[in-house]
Structure formats: structure tokens, C-alpha cells
Image (cartoon, rainbow, N blue to C red; front, side, top):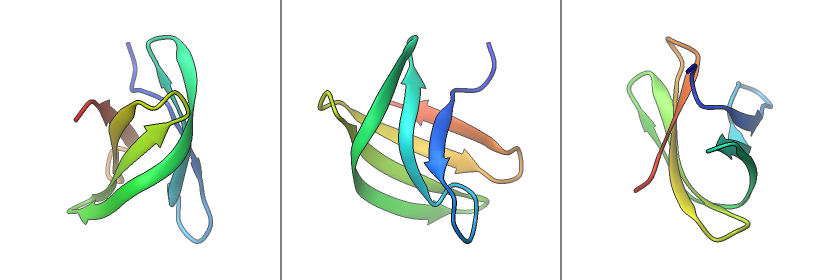
Amino acid sequence: MGSPLVEAHSGYTYGERPIALHWEGSRLLISEVEARWRVPGGNCFRVRTEDDRIFELTYDRSSDEWRISLP
């Protein structure tokens, strides 16, 4: 199946701010990053998409993969 796809803005480091995610065959634009926090080895974000859904995104630097979940 492969890892879920998250499109992220990268400035100083990769994955600074997610801008879109692919979920169940659809590309969803992120309208707001509601929260962000660091975990060992990565970054987490709680985001709201343009269609008003909430997702939690986790980027694992060691595997270079994103994980998408519903809160």
C-alpha cells in the first residue's frame, strides 16, 4: 500500500508545515494547522482541511515517512 502522502512546505528543514494530504483517493488541502508538537524522531501536527475534517499527521525523520490518523 505504501505510506500515506503528505505535501509539506520545507524551509530550513523538511516538513516544516503540511499543506495538503492524500486520504482515501482524494487530495485534501489543509486550511489550518491547529497544533504542532515534537516527538522523539519527528514532528506531529493537528490539521483542519478545507472540508472541515481534522487529521493528525506525524513525520518520522528516521524512516522519512508520514503517518496520517483521525483523532
